[in-house]
Image (cartoon, rainbow, N blue to C red):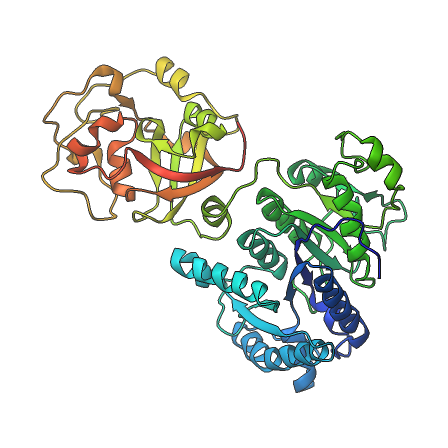
Length: 480
């Protein structure tokens, strides 16, 4: 094993796909690979690192146990095989780790398990307690009870969310290639390896992700890019490397820890770090092991925003104007949206639920500045087709999730002209683009009621005001 040059301990998440665990044709466990993974994990722990293993393979092991040739197409068939294979899979891991005296724990998750904030925090606390006890948690999706609406979609995504939950330093996605390439290296001899990725969004145009995973797995390179996007946003350095040589994890951590310590700079990263005289004397240049590193965000999301952005399924959409988009994209905004920046609501959602944050644009055009659009648009004042909404009072707080029609609102108090919002009626002329997500402080009918108005009108219109912000904990994924 490689001798560590840097003593800092790290929290490491290692994800293994089904193709790395069971043979694609015979469905028998790949004991040599599994044994090498176990030795790698145990040696990482001996060096002071905390390790979580995300392991696929329950359905693959179930296929071997039932002597079936291929995965069933029906959901219930897959769930049955997962139930058969999961027990045998964890027993296999327990046997291998037990040979080296390393205790393990089984953690089965679904998106539904962590969509509730309390259950999410319970899961985080369980991970932290297991790691503090020196146990290696082995995580898998609970395929026995998962349905399409609550599935993570792939264990790449599950490993990224797990990394975010425990604030990991590294996420290793072990696969059948040793990094990210511009195209499939097994089919294209011109494929070029990409060593460093600073922006997943920008790299998508340079690589081909059309290749799928194995016949047993559900992923491919696209799911790994999605996982890298989630993990790096939470501040986790993400690595794609080959599962055929898991011992490379040591040299990769050693190599990248050198950059974290400021001893040198990753090739192609475009960053520079000062090299001290003592460091240059004590350290010789490290050879670069084959891998692709996705650099973590310099302003990572933590906890509540990461949970909102990547764990919750949104129940509706809040449409904002361009000015609000620009403000929310700034870190100092705190991710909080005032009602004045809202131009519309889609769907029915309750207070406390996750919502998409969207901007609208003319069909076939770019995002339009709402203020300029409103200034140029003709204002109709006929009572039958109003396009100006004024603040209105109501006799009781809005509690239903039904969309409220502007024609049924009775105006009892004039609203200053500066607080009036123009509502564009021809909805078919607009397209909606999601740019982020957040947690609603009010339900959809209430936000629709106060859209475009100053927050001071919330008590008058809703009968109460728990917060001056209609949506909080907003994470903007697409900058203006």
